[in-house]
Length: 267
Ligand SMILES: [Zn+2]
Ligand SMILES: [Zn+2]
Image (cartoon, rainbow, N blue to C red; front, side, top):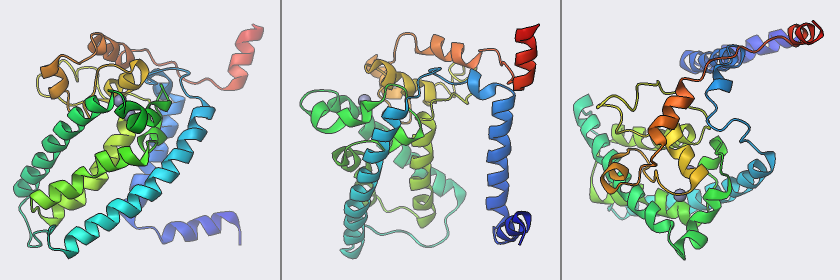
């Protein structure tokens, strides 16, 4: 069977939504490379190092396995004991939005204060040091942390669910949102528009540059979802907004085919 026949066979088994998302991501990445968009929006140009990536891969595997077993087991036990339950009747989108907002701001508060505590000794060395192994984050950095830090951050969800009974629809959003948000803030690229921090409505929500700077400079920008606690406590990095403006207004340099560069060099 020819390769293209095998590919067509594979695609026939994929549901349309997955196929659309995969096509969107692949076309977006190719466009990003050829228009020079990705190069222009790399927050720390040349920051990526394979040796950090390898170490992050090891920690990510260990921590995902340990926290998956422990937190997954704890959640199951809490459900079995009747301490965690869900409303299973259909909910209006407003109710789901309100429950999600409660989770969003509660987790943001939990994360900010525990994160600041984890920057103090001895907690830093015991818990948080591994996550700061790379000063220029990449998506894998999201999961590269000690299992103890996995319990501190991941432990919030079972605790929240034990305190508040939410609808199953809300729960279905919480984990994917958490993972996507983690991947975005550690992506190493700024995809948000340049007006983000100038608008009174959006400046309260963090962007990749915000958390990237936390890794690069170590001090400041502690928030996980919002900039609210950092703004209240004066811990936003002083040059954050100017740096964000800088990254989002860099001119695009479209990638040129190798022969065009060679011709120009010869000419
Ligand atoms: Zn930190
Ligand atoms: Zn981080």
